[in-house]
Each structure stands twice: as C-alpha cells, then as structure tokens.
Length: 138
Image 1 (cartoon, rainbow, N blue to C red):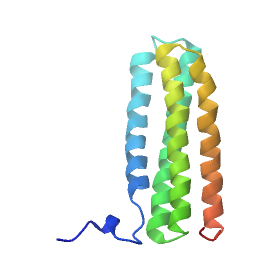
Image 2 (cartoon, rainbow, N blue to C red):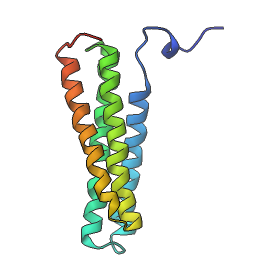
Image 3 (tube, rainbow, N blue to C red):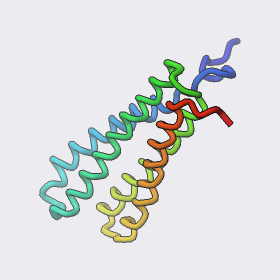
Image 4 (cartoon, rainbow, N blue to C red):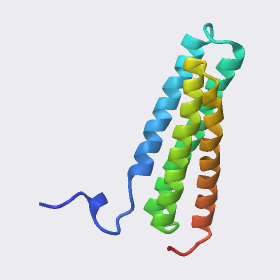
C-alpha cells in the first residue's frame, strides 16, 4: 500500500493551495451575503468593516494559492514557503475573523484583535519575499 504523494518526505505541502481555495470560496460567499443580506441591516460603518474582512480574506486566499504554485514550481525552499503560508493563513484567520466577529457581535474589543492578524499577514508577505530571495533553510 503506498502513501499519498504529499506524505512522502521531501514532497511540498499541499495545504496552502487547499486552504487558499477554500478561503477564496468562503470570501466570495461572504461578500455576496454582505451585499444582499446585510446591506439593509448594518450601518454603513459596519458594512464597510465587513467588506474589509472579505477583501483581505480574498487577497490572502489568492496569496496562499500563489504560495502553492511556488511550492509546486520549486521556486523557493519549501520550509520557507510553508512558514510564509502559515503566517498568511493564520493572520487572515485572526484579522478577518476578528472583523467578522466585531460585525456579528458589535463587541468593540474584537477591533483590537484585528491588528494582531494584520501583523501576522505583514510577516507572511515579508517571509514570502525572504523565501524568494533565497534565504537558506535553517
């Protein structure tokens, strides 16, 4: 019995592409929900917050798919790309998740959580640049 190719030592991880594709699908669904179901329910400020969450989720979802393409192409060290992907995915979950929770609950404290995700997203893009510049594996 053979194992899945993604489980073989040295095979690039496939989760960034899957997470990116699912996050993109969820962002499109959330955007449609916001435009059709929330537009008449939320204040303009809260709707703008919701739209920011959707926009950042979609942008970073595409970024994760790009990381998957870089992994498949061998464009940079796989561990470095996986680190960048983890920061992008985690940062997106925290940033967009906090904004979604802020809109859903109207608890202002969630607005204070979002910058943590933003810092992780910035770190993810920086790590991605570093990976492409050929920083050696540690």
